[in-house]
Image 1 (cartoon, rainbow, N blue to C red):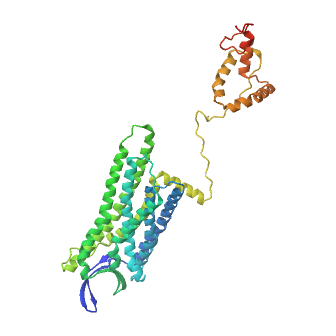
Image 2 (cartoon, rainbow, N blue to C red):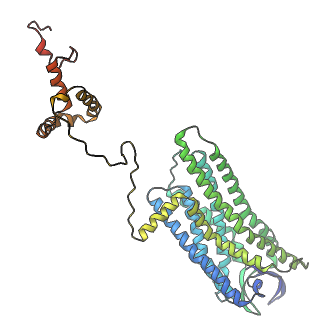
Image 3 (cartoon, one colour):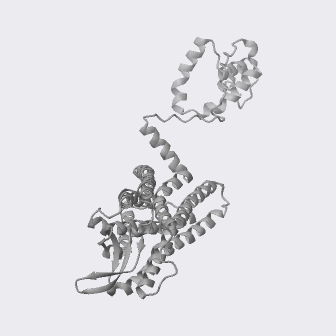
Length: 440
């Protein structure tokens, strides 16, 4: 329903003016071989690749939510990918089929719901982006705050988004019908005279409520969120959170800009068509009787390509999604995830340690070396649990004597006992130096 033209539709009671939007008149001067091959081929490429990308993104978001990473922003991203998937699965194939044939042979039900379904999905995407911008601003304003959201609350948000989107596009479903023309059946939007005043207001208010207002709201909040990200925190531990918030804002802002740019030509065509229809109904010849073919065709292709661009933007700008794509690819190809390589540090040296020689047991080494060994072993022995100290000393002594090793503490004890180099405070056996009266 892209080409419009005023016509006088003859009914039983007489001739009345009707507002008709012909979906195939735009291409009546195009070579059928070019139209029936090129346009369906481009739409088929967009459909196949877009379904694969959106389905993969939805699987990653669902697995993250299943692992406990449920958040409002990820849920809204899931809703955006879901709407893109609906457009690619249910709208693009029918649009490609209608382009490949000269007359409409998809039935009355498809004619009645095709344009309404497409516009409802696009409106749901626009409203989702607006809610996502508000959620992103709240997150960036206080990224360290733990916000718990329940699945029921998310479902309520989804319900109101889709209810609003499907309600605002009801006139497109109400006035769509099949008409028989010279080339056969065509799917058109016919407005009876009693509804022309309503449609004159609707065709101007609909772009404002579905395109201009939500995207302007989203861009405003993304700009404010980016300003919050630019304020550098004085605490070092919050720098990583700020970097993550900035990347998230950039990704969601890119989604909004892509929607605003790729959807804009379709709204230019929408307003232009309705303006021509109003002039023809008033009996005034418009300056341009028909839209340029390239503009009309490009507007539709760009609108459908938006459903492919969205998951590609998320994949290219989100580190979490890139990791999810890699993990999903490993599971699909039955590859085991390689263990993470240990990073070298003070407790994990990168070089292989050479075996240490056994300590000498001769008496000549008892002295400064034994004192240094005892002082270096002191802190490590204090860190051991008390249970190991109590029950493991005898076992350690047996092993050390069996291997010919003299423990440093034991060596220092006998060295001070033989040389008498201890003082009263550090005397290991004070009872040996007490006199008969109990005094030293």
